[in-house]
Image 1: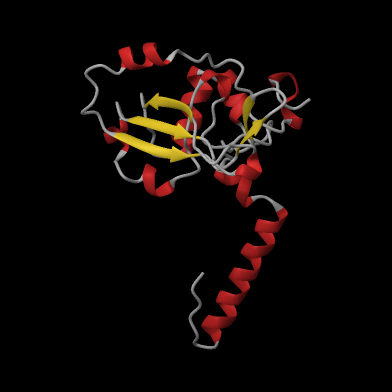
Image 2: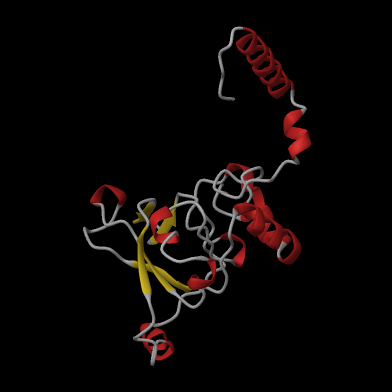
Length: 190
């Protein structure tokens, strides 16, 4: 339980069954003429090797491979900030496993997958809107509201945030403090 998309609320690791591997020879053929392309390396510490099933499991949320779409929007902030949004298109990211023996590995990294960036977004909101329109199934499996391994947050309208009781209480306190502060000739930064 927890490894398939049939019960995403109780997932323990990402379901990678929809991803098909390719032989090394085919990979090398696809990479002919691409030696000058920029490549970024990403080591995923949240991978484990299951010796019984001889499979690698990814227990983290990023990069997220579920929904048939490889996405990276939480981890590796410095890597993501290296280029502006348009500068990422066409870049390669090689993703390696952990090499920790405590996680079932032999002390060496394994190539988990590689991906070529097709599109980048300025914000989580822009990415959310794109998925909502173009790929609702991927949005559902990547959403934190439905999947503990998801990492896309559902946006709330600004008015809805302001009308929560906690926000109203805070706003009332800030207004009271500001009024009292101005009576005393003191300024508060809110």
